[in-house]
Image (cartoon, rainbow, N blue to C red; front, side, top):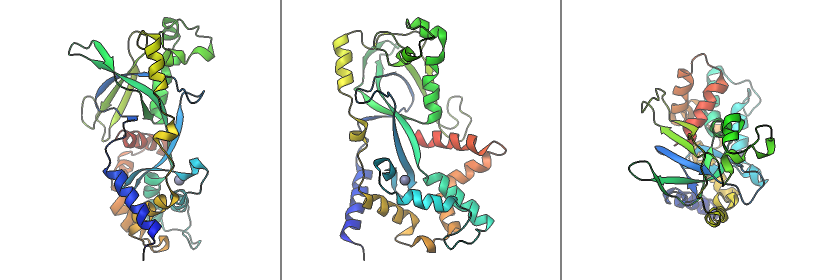
Length: 297
Ligand SMILES: [Zn+2]
């Protein structure tokens, strides 16, 4: 018999899934030019948010650990990652592999979020306006692509920044007077020049630096509209996280009763295919790409 809090948690998950997309989160879907904005709530321009993706139907489950709470999904992931089963016996090879595939899917993954506006353009490509500010989530690989500009001497000079001045380097992206917009290219599998089996997001600075809007008051208005990241991704009740995991493991089945092979077929199909295609590349490489593909969904 389910408890009231379990039922409530399940309903909360359903509601969240049914709700329209978060207006405070920006996601690329094709070709875009975006401009990064200074984070008014933190000296650090990048905010980290940790998720468990693919836990049953709850696609973007916030890991409770980032709020200082225990996390049942992390505990379960640790168990999957281990060489021994719940009883302390050595896992069979097939079970170990199956567990590893599920582990990769559900383990905690941190994305960095940065505030952006998207440039709105007319048919000829001229900028005519901009979107409201929203938070853009990047994998570590993508954030390195985005930050690359800050290490290029010529581009720093083009923004009037001394390449030796480490503290000012971020202004090449976050500056309001003169900085580079980023061109974001979202490529589905077998679309554009993406020959991979998963979505790729490419991030490159545009050719010339420009002002944010050209008006100091407008710039400031945009920056004050940015919500704190914790308001955009508020803490979930622990019961909701537990309910999602329970559902993922199989409708209230105890973890010890789980059949890893069945779970593998059911939940790890996509990542299994990827790991096989990965061939001789390092696990880390393959895994990095897996994260990229996941984050761009
Ligand atoms: Zn967790």
